Length: 472
Figure 1 (tube, rainbow, N blue to C red):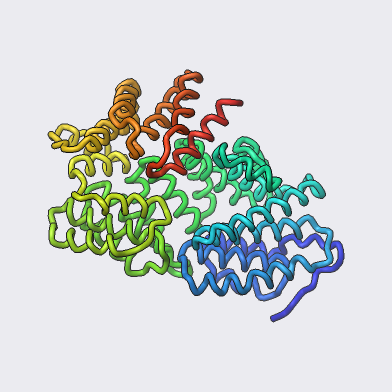
Figure 2 (figure 1 turned 60 degrees about the horizontal axis):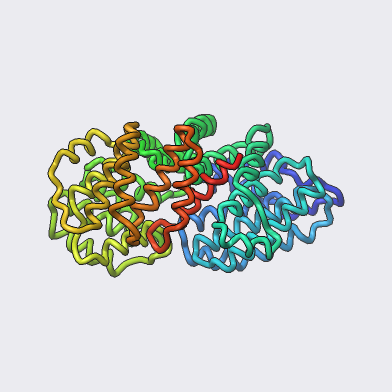
């Protein structure tokens, strides 16, 4: 392998070949990137680490992870030992730490991830002080400040003790500076901004509109296509997500195999009530899965595909398999595990209403509401009211939604279900939309008083982000 050693004071910025490799890597066209990564430079070392990080994040392959940990120190030391005053040096080092942190998080090594986040923070803060006009800094800074600002208040003292602080608002502002520039990392910054807007700030419509432009202007980018599909699904645009899935499925030659697409498509087919198609997608995902996460949930959703389609024999087999398979690290698997530990199968009518509403198939959900659901437990009564609230909220009948959310809060009480805290969160969003800041603040704060329920981390983070926005 040829080695190019940058000279003293070299700016270490991407060469035209490295910029080309970066484009291919972000598109998940790793084989096409390879010819441009043959020379060992600061840029190619950074890009190789980015490429391997993406492979592990999507595959969760334990062998790749082991190789990654062995190679990381060598990559890091190569850049760290360079005699250069370039702003790119600490930027690359901070980015390597961030990439490593996300890989560790994905593989369940939370302490290693926390250590990498802290090192990334220190490196990029130092780089910002020394090179305040260096635009790429804002990618790392923005992400870190948003994540730090999302940490619940009761844990902020730990961050301060470690010399780390940040706010969601500051982070978004920093990402915007890069996204609005003509810098090499502009597209990546635009994508990051949209993801945070959707997943943290609940600005789903705006995020989708912005990401659509990013995706269209990045023709053939499989990573952006998958992220766009995820945003559509989160915004209950199931049919659009399914249409996009079929386009992405045609991007086969030269692209990394993105098995997670089958899991996503299975979810939408399940929501739509096309159970055979859902079954096929979940089976494909399970067959090619190499990681720990989403396996339990996939078997559980395969059970739902059979059961809601009347195939009780296959449903029982999938249900028992789901009980014995996978882990409970991510929220989807935790939710599946809770359902699997129930003494009975879920209520079919409620489940169908939930799935149809989540996917944006609202006419189907409204027809299901007209069926008489047999509610046998207090949890079913609370959930049925909650599902009505979610449906009316999504179709814009806000006053009806408000009433059902409030009824859910009363019915659920302090039970360890997510229906009440998420009802509070949604009421916060509705009142903020209506301009009733005091009511919005009241319900966002009420979220923080609930403990020990599913999806607590994400619901709490969203409430905290909502409160932060109200302070502006």
